[in-house]
Length: 454
Ligand code: UD1
Image (tube, rainbow, N blue to C red):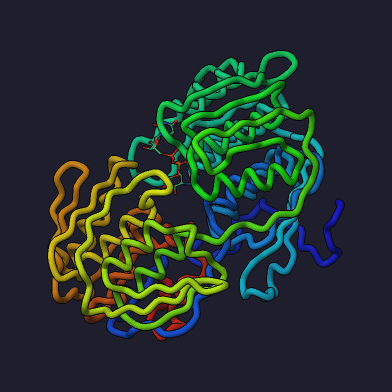
């Protein structure tokens, strides 16, 4: 395998990947009241790593990704790709690397051995549905189960189906599977306007179009930094893509893609989460290996709430005042607006504000499940449709709570850091899907956070 060092560890995905919380019964115990002080290294972005890993299906050469976070979602996706014939090896899996955590992983798929992605695997993570794009582009056929994933709304796949049909695919839904076939001679470059902005559909169509015949123009595309990161990697693999990061992306199809080496961009959601934790619990923390420009809307909101944030050369410095939080209204929007993936964490912060704030969720219709759990800590939140009204409380009190989805679960941890007494968060497997070594990163900054196994 080209470019793979002899020290690489070949992974076998026959067994469950070793992972804290793999039994799903662990709890996180938080004792609130300590301000945070120190340095937190930010991991590679989960939401960039997932499509980047999937893009390895597009080439028979080796794609090497650096700064890959060690997360349950990443491990599961690697297991799914293993089923399609991708050979995966990891460097430094057990060693600390220069930035503390990052892994370098090599993906090599000489031939696609399986064009079906089964319900058993896809239901566990919605993003694995995105394999439909590369499978169809490279093999001309794909049979992918309708997805599952976080229970934060209905999350249909109509945009993927319409978009792939626009590129000439014939698609049928049979017994819970999307069965797609490219025309003889492959997918065809076309002009497609997304009726709604979708990150996943943008990733998928962009990947599919790299190997289509002719030029594809995608309008009303998602502009998230993760879309730009995927486009940069695809370009390094030889794809001809322009306009990623703007609403109009054009892709000139090529006959094949080569291998490449690419570094996963920093996780802006993890960055924003820790910034909000410091704003809420108080203290002074430097977030390393990240970039303030990836989350301007969130930083503006955290500053408006009273925290001091200064971009540094390699990250962000934040000073939080804990007891002096101002109420701020936000509305979630596609990038560059305030991210829905930080909505629950910002709501946690607002539960301690001196006054009333409003949060409007416009991306997912059922993304307020953390409200009743925050209420168990003493928060005063009322819901009306897609709007939450939060009356800031002078104190939160620790309580047993339950994680309901990935981002909601971390909002409960940061609320626990600012609450009096002990909070236990159960269903921690949600956290392990998206936050690398959360307990370790917080504990190093003086927080009392530990994983308790049943
Ligand atoms: C991605 C992110 C997720 C984030 C979300 C919105 C990853 C792995 N996940 O999810 O963390 O919360 O973007 O920023 O990157 N929709 C349709 N039809 C479709 C596809 C989507 O109606 O075919 C709707 C969804 O239900 C939702 C909206 O479009 O209301 C946006 O969803 P989308 O951007 O597709 O989210 P994901 O890509 O699944």
